[in-house]
Amino acid sequence: MHSLQLFLLAAVAFLVLGSFVAAVAARVFAARLARWEPRARHGALVLLAALPVLTAFSLLLSASLPSLIALVLPGLDHCPMHDDHHAHLCFVHLPKVGIHLPVLLALVFGLSYLALRAMLALSATVRAMRVLSSLRRTGEHRDDLGITVVETHVPICCAAGLLRPRVLLSRGLLESLGDEERAVVLAHERAHVRRRDAFVASVVRALAVIHMPKTARWLVREVEIAAEQACDEEAAEGVGDRLAVASAILTVERAAQHAAARELDGLAVGFGECAVERRVEALLADPRPQVSLGPLVILLGLAALTVLALAGELHHLTESFLSAIAH
Amino acid sequence: MSLGPVRPPLLGELETAVMNHLWSGGEGEAKDVHAALGKRRGITLSTIQSTLKRLYEKGLLARDKVSHAHVYRARVRRDDFHRDLVGELVGDLMRGHADAVVSAFVDIAERAGPKQLARLEALVAERRKQLGRGRK
Image (tube, rainbow over the protein chains, first blue to last red):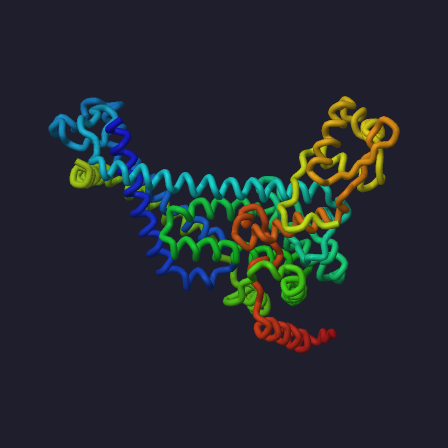
């Protein structure tokens, strides 16, 4: 039990460290990332979202490595050098003393808070999925377009669903769009379906819980905008006209403004720095050159190997840290 | 008729099939619905009867007693049902509760300001003009 407490505390400390690393990386690379083409930017942002977890996993694996080696090769066991009151991060020599009660309570409350937030988010997501499922099953299936038509004038078009998304298009929007605009909108939404963007976005939202609040808000928004821009690019490649995509975005935005004034007046609609503006301006500019994520992945792999190579030092450092704050 | 601001009832698979049948076919007794849906699905008449009763209790069906049987019809039109579901979905998107399962073509919760929109439309029109593709 004491051993579990120490491993848990180490994992939380490494997650906090990872979220600091991610916050610094976001600050340093935000401007550079903004110049990347959206598909690569989306991938890089997802990696950044996973950075605290990747960091914590590599650090915990590295700090546990001497103990794992001692399990296989008892001759390399170094624990007998320490006394029984040492904070052993070890599977062989279980620590005799647990962590201080206040630290333990803080740990339990922190983890309970995260679990509660996750459950509330999950409950809202499940209800939204049931609403979407009702819309899909009672809507008109247009197999010729590969969409479900929803009987409402609210101009809504979305790829809906987590694992098996389907394109939903409202009757009002379907009837108001011209052929070219409809082709753009459907190509964009099919790109979301193909890329599983809603699933990726939900994973990023879950990972955002362990980021610093400011970094988390920035990450969630940037991932969503990058996904939209990636689908804009795919739609532009599909219809062969970037300007047609920009024009369709503005048509739907204009329709959404009318609906917001007419039908959604009970709901607050945000104005301000707007995704539509960034998307249209990107489409009016020349396409960004392709960027490979390979070097970034190799860099992260090398960083993880370096952390593993420092296993001995990290193990002692972690035990000293745990002894200082826990015992 | 509209279901109002109350959250619309959600439907299971059989309930959806029954509603779709009644929206398309008007009205019917339990045995009519069973003949259309139940036999094909291997469902008993009593299952159809309890589904109709559940939909009636949810406020989605109305019924009249004719002779010894209830004749059911949709109390809520399909477009009203959809409007209420979309209303809930839009509300969830505004509150950030449904973002995980929906990728909308334009963000539901965020509108470009009128000046921003006019500026962007002017930019697109200007670019079309430059490309010689002038269009109204």
